[in-house]
Image 1: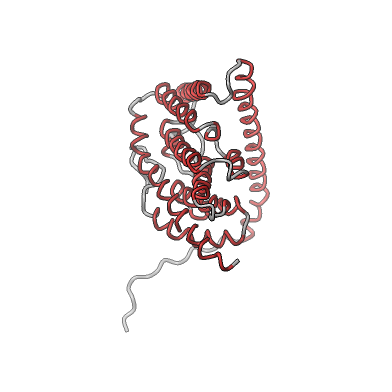
Image 2: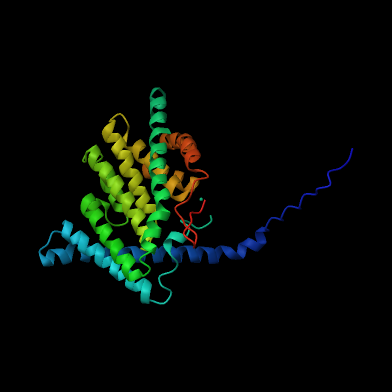
Length: 307
């Protein structure tokens, strides 16, 4: 019997533990340092947020979240970011549209109904997110035609201000604290209000990523998914709020990040329920089949979508 002429390449040898051991302490130092830096930046950002959205409007005698204040503040923020991108050395890094979203690392009788609520909500959220991903190159191309950060970012800020005035104060900022607020009172808003929050926040994420605002997309996408899931609960009260939130976040993150494990774990952390985690594992399959092979919310330097 003739032997196959194609020889397999030898497997790469495993890194010995002795080689990895000296890296443990430096890795711990980097991890702790990065965590402390993040906490410091977050605290500074929250303090600045209080000044700009509470102390200053109170001193001026205007509403904290009035339409006028939201539009003025976000337009001014766009101008400030544009000035940084234009003049500060390094120009605030590369166009955020061209960067990745994460570093390489990522009772039995009610189960049928819960499972169905989870294929439907997760898949519907994934489809909604894919709509934003499909529009991403076109919106980014529109802002790119403005050619200068002191045009693109103030215009983007103005659009974000108009969206914020439409969606209300819960659609402002990064969205993590706001997720806690809407999840704490799932019956406090109507289905129409949750739908408005979903659409406005997703549009704001799309505009911010397209016009050049720096920042991540995970937290805003989590808010979009949570609002979408709570909209499903408001429409069909039999859908438990925790299940709606987890499934909505799972589907939205799958569409935006294309990272299955990141999406699944983020959704699971929000609800901390082993039963719902099991449902999410199953619900992630149809949602993943919908998004796999489709464009990502990331562009190449020439403006074409990354698949």
